[in-house]
Image 1 (cartoon, helix red, strand yellow):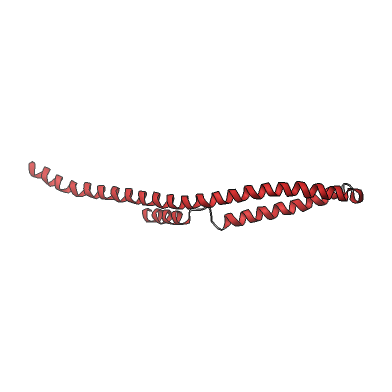
Image 2 (spheres, helix red, strand yellow):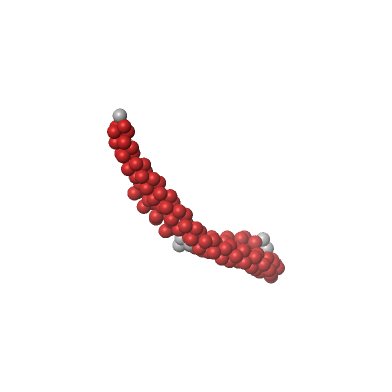
Length: 130
């Protein structure tokens, strides 16, 4: 009877060490992906901070410019155009808003705030595991 137990024990250590090796490799892979994601997130954080500062400064400058130029144009054109000057200014500022939104979209489309390397590695991992 002891020979059957020793025979079973000899088979199980191989299975157990194999499972342990798989778990060890999987944990190493997870740690590696976390490190890669943290590197990319730090880069994204810098780009995001630059983007937000640029956006805030542009918004403040835009509001001052809008206020002063609109006031001046309305004052100068009111006697000739009346209420139509307000419609012209509305169209003008709408076009400017669309241009700013387009620039912001172009910034995001270039992938400055994404994790391309991490996502590619995670896709490879998913494909390898499936």
